[in-house]
Image 1 (cartoon, rainbow, N blue to C red):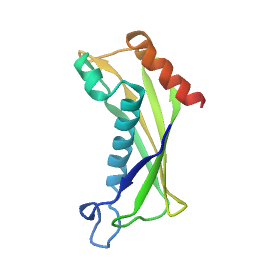
Image 2: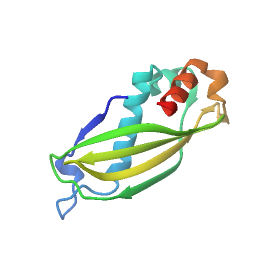
Image 3: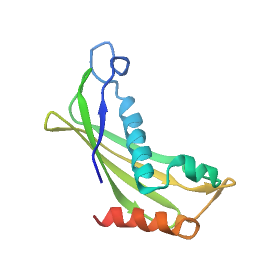
Image 4: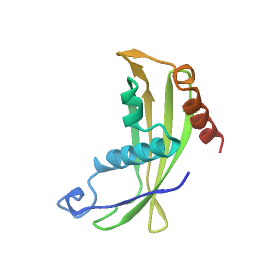
Length: 134
């Protein structure tokens, strides 16, 4: 997968001039949306077909601060894929340092009920599974 890049905006920084910790969760989402689009199964497509993918867990470990105009390169990989959920791992780098590592876990719902992506979107499931093996 290509690396997703996010340039830190002024409004994303706190009074101390560093990127506010809450924004790293948003950066993970930006990366995930881009990744799904690149796989051909963006949120807009899935939602048009009646499937949503809420976050059911998130974890974030901050290593080094970033500041306004820093470019954060974010790598995403499939950490674990199961019948009803997927866990994605993110590594964020800036200035040749790992600045943050995190994971997000998602399920897939159709009409409010869990749906097995392997059965509902077999091509998408296979692409996600292959990303985990890469």
